[in-house]
Length: 298
Image 1: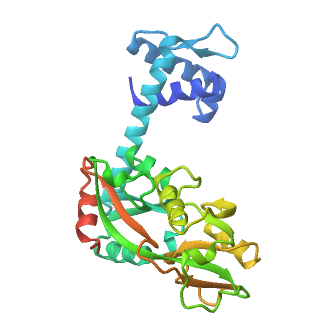
Image 2: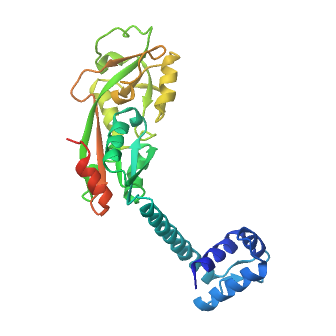
Image 3: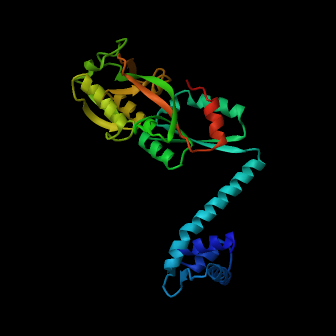
């Protein structure tokens, strides 16, 4: 049994055809057939049912396919790591961040880390908060920067640090009666049409409950016209004067001279969004250890 045989088998399983699998690998159908028979001899079971048209997997083949794909993936990863090491890349770090946080100083921090650790490959992924939490738990990310909408910081398997306390601001159109105020209280927005920026993309998360509680503390239920995790679309609608929104300041601080938009800070101790860096304790990555030790987090 060898890696090529596993690749030929998965191709036959996916295409349900020896001919198409042979074409993919620039081999003859006879050569593919011989390789599959050799694989079946090594396994000690028939993997392909040749009596059907198109061909199909036997029960043994269906079980074997999953493990074969996993072996191929692990080998591909091993080859990639070897090539990276040869090229001077000796580690990698998968970083997830909440939508909108690309406007923060995160990119500058990553740039500084990369200059000091050029042999660590940084790969970044943008997602909503619930997907980030699920991805961290499933091993898709090494570390995430997020508003903790799933209360992940209370998970005993996780470690975290507070990165930023971002002031919440009201996003208004320029002709709004409050557009020239130095600050606002949430109570003053009672009669406004709200374009709701959801940290999770829906209204069923811990984070959304927190924001809804702020409205209840202000004495009313918001009149929500739209809820979305897409800040760009929300700001477009505010500029079109369809409503107003409340956003964390890291999304707005770098928007200078934005067309028909003004941003007014909200007053109140709870009018903040806490951004956390969160990672799993069991993650033994040396790159992660270097990153969490170096990264400038209070």
